[in-house]
Image (cartoon, rainbow, N blue to C red; front, side, top):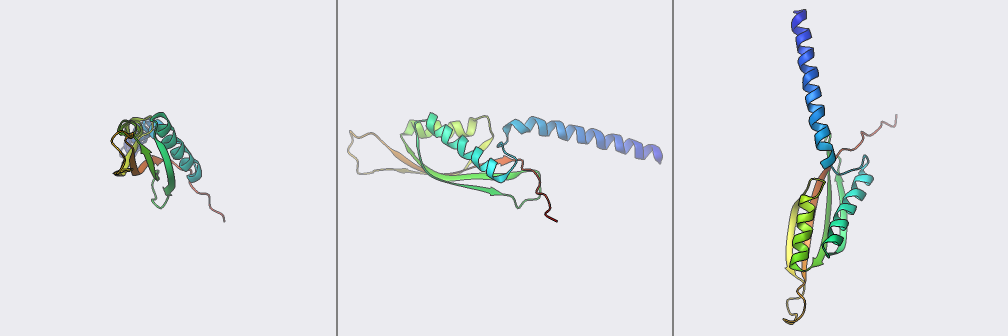
Length: 144
């Protein structure tokens, strides 16, 4: 019986080591920030940086963090709108999905910005989006 308990502890320790190693491998792909505000700021920076590199103009953005789940990760979201040409919008979306942080486009609505524009006018598209990622937030401290 004692041997079985000792063997179980060894297996649990190995399992914990394996999970920790997988977590460390995942960590560089998470939204940086140990607080909700820091994670939101990091997401805003990632999105505006991708837009700037893609020659896309960001309009408004709304940041959110879902901290209701009782697991190690929090969902961080950015909803907003942007304007650019076809190449710029495609480059922006590729930068978001292929960047160093694992992000996913959850919602995308693409509209022609000015359907009545003359043919010689540069094409502009308007996009509404929601982009999400995962962050590891520090556990909240009790105020007792």
